[in-house]
Image 1: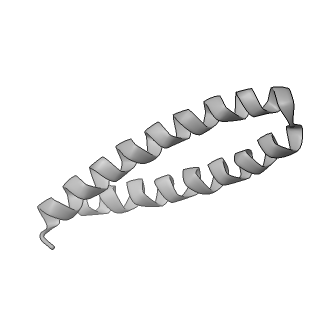
Image 2 (image 1 turned 90 degrees about the horizontal axis):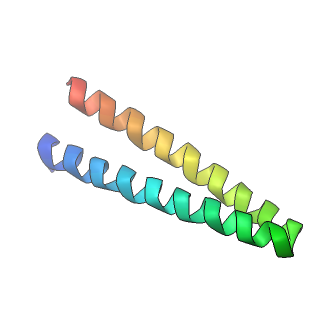
Length: 66
C-alpha cells in the first residue's frame, strides 16, 4: 500500500471514528435516563474508541511528516 493510500484511508477512518463517537455520546445521554449501568458500559466503549482514534491520528501525523 502506498503512503498516499494509507494516509487517505487513515483520514477516512478518523472521520468515521469521530462520527461514531458523536453517535455514542448521544446514546449515552439517552441510556443514562433509563439505566446508569448501561450508560457506564457504553462510556467504557467510548473510551476505547477515543484511545483507538488517538493512535490512528498519531499514525496519520507520522505518515504526513514522512
